[in-house]
Length: 150
Length: 104
Length: 298
Image: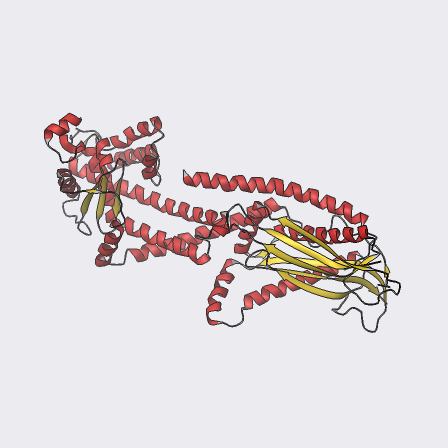
């Protein structure tokens, strides 16, 4: 009886994680494409030399995002950890986290009126299951930062 | 494709840049190798299976970054940086990024 | 930066950083691989462990049995005539030239749960709840010789060896007890449990065969010996809330399946399954109290 309860709880969380997770992921990717078009003309680079002579102002611009790993992805990744190979379910998660962080940085720069963002750096941190429980799969934090110039 | 960690390509002129390009991958070894590695931890020495894992991850991350640069029509990537993170335990996450440029 | 910037859009449908693979297909592939490999490992380890466990020698088995018996929390009924009765019945079930591997000890446990069990070292556990439910000596004889069959086949040792291996294998992988591994530990341990269940079903069938053969040997017929399961089936269907009851039968094949199998076996062997009922002593339902009190209770 206890086993059946456990199995149905895991199944329920898996199904919930899969449907909500993939729905949100699709929506996020569409949203990213749309917003990336809007900032397409804002140059970003991770180099900082050869600065133009007419810079009047600089500003530190930062974009931070924390995205949660859903239960389905977590279990898939754990199984992949046993089998070995590419953890495909996390790839999409990392990709959209990074793009979101860069976008937020760019959006901040645009609002401020920057002409470009230079010397961009990216950091990724895993904020893993604080409560250590089964229903707390943890999350990914990405921070993108650079110098906006006018 | 010219890859460099410098801000310029020595001896060449950068004429255009296309913004950031990035390549990332996250890979794991199977549990058997994990167990062997944890045994090796007792006596010390190089964990060849994990070195191999990172090697594979690095190659794949660079390959992906290059592909993205190609999609943008670049022929060089400058100021390449690597970053690792531990999103999943026992897995290697490697992230490479740089600025896609055209040199002549 | 003074270098000219040329905005370039990346193709939408070809994201180099994301492998194009359906997450569900990926999941099914992974789950299948993990389950199949776990089954193979559990089966291999299980066979080795049970083979090793049966080779520990009589002295060690007695020691292990004592250790395990000490973990039982139910109170044991001592110095009761029912124990002597059960002991006699159990020894009667042995074949003429057959000797028990180790001396057998009957333990009567004071609990309502309908159950009987065998432990390494020859400890036969009978619950008073079981004695309340049996209707004839034939039924009791079958249950006792079923447990005797387990003992003669060294099943308790084998199961112990197997569970030890499964537990340590899970611990070695580091997913046995850590809660942070989420549902993964459940998936692997269920596979382990199911593998054990498969073994124990085999053992049950063998013990049933042994049990019926001994009953036939003793009474000359198998009549009424399987009534317990018949009655139980109805009982179980009627009252579902008795979850402790189904626990005993969890590793047992379905009751009806069991009865059908044993009846087919009897036909094959030419065993007579009809015969007279041997009744139980009147005081079997009562504790060792005086006769009047017992009659008053019934």
